[in-house]
Amino acid sequence: MNFEEMRRLMVESQLVPRGIKDARVLEAMRRVPRHLFAGPQAEQRAYDDSALPIGEGQTISQPYMVAVMTELLELKGDEKVLEIGTGSGYQAAILAELAGEVYTVERVAALAEAARERLRSLFYGNVHVRLADGSLGLPKEAPFDRIIVTAASPSIPAPLINQITEDGIIVAPVGSRFSQQLLKIRKTSKGILEEYHTPCVFVPLVGEYGWKIEE
Image (cartoon, rainbow, N blue to C red; front, side):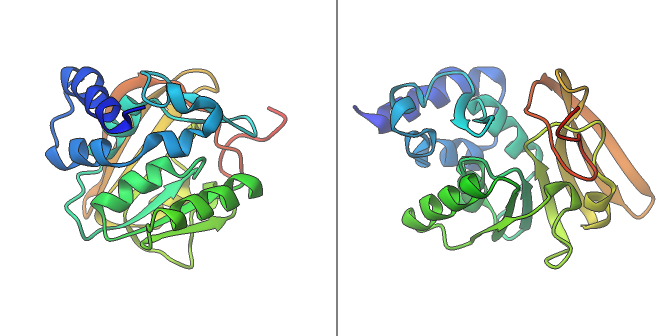
């Protein structure tokens, strides 16, 4: 299969028509081999306009959602980024193409280890995978210039706001367990600025500052 052509078509048919304009984001989406993150059983569907299951009750996000969240981060190239919810590692790979250093946190050990090996095999040396409760952030590595949360929570966890730099940006899906909206916040000297963006549906962020497993 011509995966390079499939990536090109994904960008031209799914991302550009929906308003993704950042040239660096579009190029990263053309470059990163999404099929290697979707797994052999989903390889042929890797560039479909949909999320895909990756096991452990988790998913690899729809290409458009990856692109729009990444674009909202306003990455220039030298940022230190924290991702909450490693999953397959695909979003981390996109971030690695666009930022300086990427720290990504996953609570499921099997997913964290698989993502670590996958990212290593693709030579993403600027990605650091950690096994932890993502709702607590990563205080030992803070502060971060950008934080992206790829799981849903009722609100942006307070530890994440505390771990972002001044003029830093956090992008996260917030709302109920089954329906959310992307929230972008910018931390300024005068307070927190909020912008709401596209509706979305993500798996829940489980942890001390997220949802409980039994909820």
